[in-house]
Length: 219
Image (cartoon, rainbow, N blue to C red; front, side, top):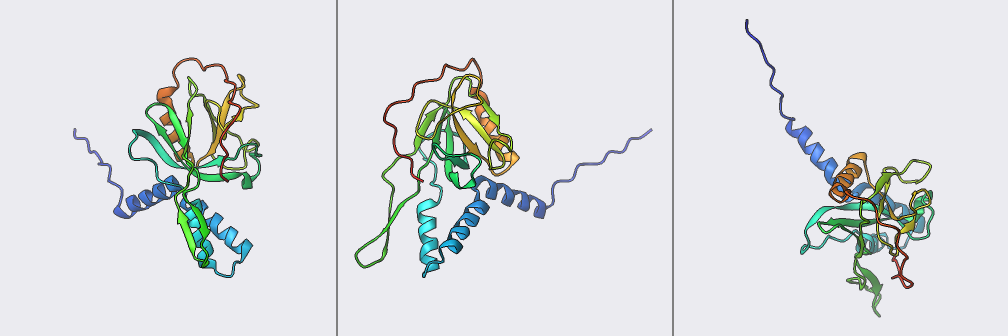
């Protein structure tokens, strides 16, 4: 008696290319960035739309992660501004985020400072502020946010040490300080949860008292 077996076919080249493109767009949040840029453009209707788009790209594009750190995870996420309402879409900003092998999640500020010189020409200079570092709380407690907790889809929280973007978690049992973030898809959120996994061992530390003077967060 003979048995026949059917070999699993590899994805077609077109399917693989489409998957790679979709993953690339999700990692860098290209579609929401362009949508936000065009929304602001059509709301402002500037005399020179191309200068306006150049300004938006220069000032608000997510910066590249550092090349001198060992990174476990990197990507563009929506970040809730301090003291903001998570149910308001306007209170979220796209920022490059990365997680180091030391259990520190970093959130970038704006990519550049944009102004004009005496002749009216646009001047683009590097930002003075450095990315903000947040050490994960021991235990790296994280969870998904429901649709009645955040306006952004695929939102989640991660317990961190206090900082300017950290919020006091009202629904967290221990009252931990948390970052409220949002991914572009379930897959991207799962990637971040998997990155938190090595730091999820042990009991969470008690919440810390935040420092009196915190740096200003750029919107």
